[in-house]
Image 1 (tube, one colour):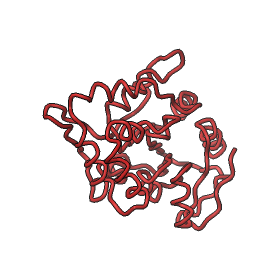
Image 2: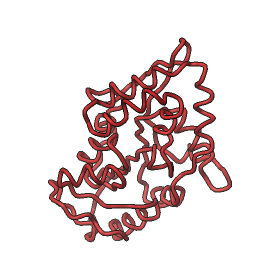
Image 3: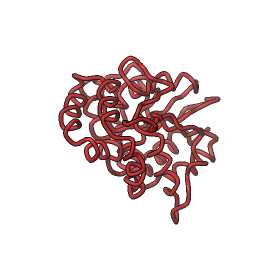
Length: 240
């Protein structure tokens, strides 16, 4: 089990102490760079909107531009005729090791696994449809998927989002309110997961997200793959 990253945190949770008598839990997981082992949505934007993404992405990572504005600008600069190519681009993207095993563990515990992505629903579904062992689909293993929808009927892609927030195309915290639980677990890797990370009971963070949380002195659990997460949760919930 990976150690917790030590920092000040309002929840003051201790992953070495199992949670007792909780009646409900839920796991919220990012997609791009979290479920996928490589940047899939961000990589697509770099390939399909190279000039604009080169300008916009550094501003997003520096938090000088909102995700709502920046991601919309990049997506809506892409001709609709290229949407099938975007879905094809996602087909070859690998998932991070241990995803299916984590889902097995969560099923055993009766804990729903919900994907909240600031990327495209079509890309999420394309990857999950072949992410299982021997290329089997994991779509039916996921309790819900919240992501950006696309209208490709015009000359350029048009963004549609049921949970658009003030700064995000998909407000992850707003989605979380649809699934209240005594313990909410968050899994993420980048700036798109920051608001979720600050709101959940326990957060697993890697890559850029861990740096953002370090800056805010917010406690998190570092992870490399989903086997790490399964092991940590197994120890945390061992007597439940």
